[in-house]
Image 1 (cartoon, rainbow, N blue to C red):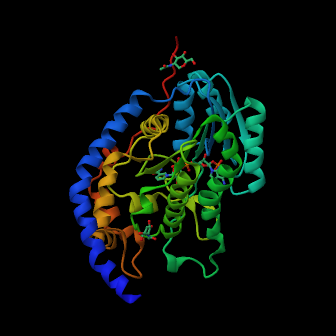
Image 2: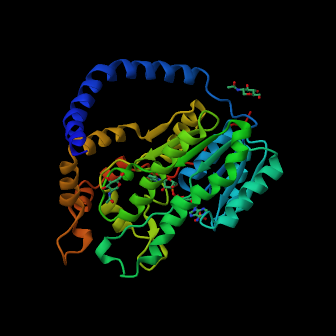
Length: 350
Ligand SMILES: NC(=O)c1ccc[n+]([C@@H]2O[C@H](COP(=O)([O-])OP(=O)(O)OC[C@H]3O[C@@H](n4cnc5c(N)ncnc54)[C@H](OP(=O)(O)O)[C@@H]3O)[C@@H](O)[C@H]2O)c1
Ligand SMILES: *[C@@H]1O[C@H](CO)[C@@H](O)[C@H](O)[C@H]1NC(C)=O
Ligand SMILES: CC(=O)N[C@H]1CO[C@H](CO)[C@@H](O)[C@@H]1O
């Protein structure tokens, strides 16, 4: 029995290496050809029914505008923040019918009600956008010993998407619909202080990769891995150790540092384009995909960089982290790196 593993240990790396050399170029060409085809036959979402969770701010809000502009009918949800303004704007932009549903996706009954109310109102469901998410920023050893407060991250980001998808799948099968999932580039980047968030996003990617195989051709799944997109999250609204949502500008500067932040409206546009083409995945902004290769081939370099730039020695406040200093030194850079104002969508008047 051992012999077979010894044999495989020897053969598998070489087999992989030669397959890469031999098949990667023609396979990439083939995929490029398919991608061109699917962008020619991209879905027209006019009149289609779309659920967007977490639509009251950030990427979700801009997704509502982008789908609205294309004439989709919308069901928007969030827990606390007001959805009415977003709904009105989406309507003005071109959506023929927008409903808002107050729901907490970490609660399974809310997810059921959300899908039922949508289908009762519109009679069908075409796209489910699992966007609602919260983040947590905390060194593991700074967290209280009883870490149960952090379950909220998994409950919202992972279970929230899974529950909603469970109720939506029968309707999506009927309509040959689509699922959009918001994972994160952090699912492969081991950024310090984001271990719980990271894990929830890696879990999402793993879950929906598997579901894609089970659902087959009927329901296409697009997994989105955004880098830094301007929103409440990059303004650093996160779950504190005490289990409350709070905003800390300093922490934001340490975590985001001088990495350029992309605009939520461009991100939303790229996401809807990608979903309409039926892409498997989308990284936005796309230069972030290069970090995946770095993680794959030079994991030590990535770890070393994070350790050097975003951590401080014990006892030194985190505001002293080099990543924040770089940002402060390059005052003015902030203007360049962050979309300066929150963009308000252009409303066509014709
Ligand atoms: N911004 C980035 O750089 C970035 C990067 C990678 C991934 N992402 C992911 O993209 C998604 C959107 O993020 P964002 O940056 O746009 O964040 P955001 O501005 O904080 O928006 C999050 C939205 O989700 C809602 N929400 C939170 N918890 C919820 C719950 N339990 N049930 C229902 N709605 C809930 C929030 O509204 P209420 O608080 O009113 O419920 C809000 O509408 C998230 O999944 C996030 O992890 C963002
Ligand atoms: C999408 O379909 C609607 C009617 O269902 C049509 O009016 C519109 O022109 C189409 N848009 C595109 C870009 O094909
Ligand atoms: C800090 C951390 O937990 N990083 C992990 C994020 O998720 C990926 C798995 O996709 C791990 O490789 C990282 O180590």
